[in-house]
Length: 200
Image (cartoon, rainbow, N blue to C red; front, side):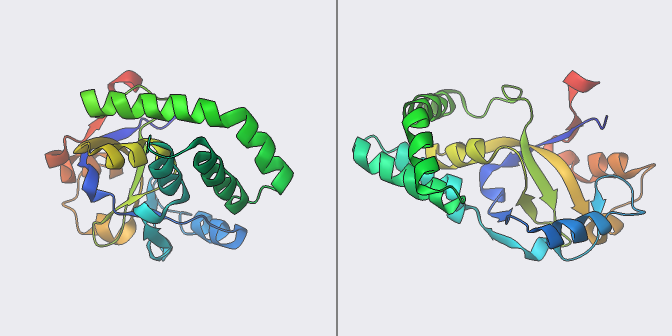
């Protein structure tokens, strides 16, 4: 199993996210990693990004964390979210019935905790997924969308990211080390780059 590589990132560094991919782009992404070291990808994947504040989860949590909104407004926001994710009307209604109160309790609790304590690493099974594009831009990828959205909404200045993969072109411009992980640790040292001590 690959040891996670963690970095401390200013929350504002994650401005864009890798948009949901269809089957063909997932296949292309897989092919773009063939014959390369783990964590390294070539190709144009970095061009399929959107502003994070337009992520469906960001919009939903922005709505649900607003305690001035009514329950019916929260229901409508969840209905829109589930319908946008491809749920039928009946499926959306069933999920709303089961999840609204849990969503409110969980994410308002998380928001209060972050507002008081900042982003605390290690509370989830993973950290916020991050990739590095060819020009060095940090791009939000799988894992931690809810946590990043809450951190941005409550003004947490710093989060912990887990480097999932990097673009080959960016990596080639870094001073060479023994392997990819060593190169990443060296290149990202100013961001407190480290291997996850829990997995060491």
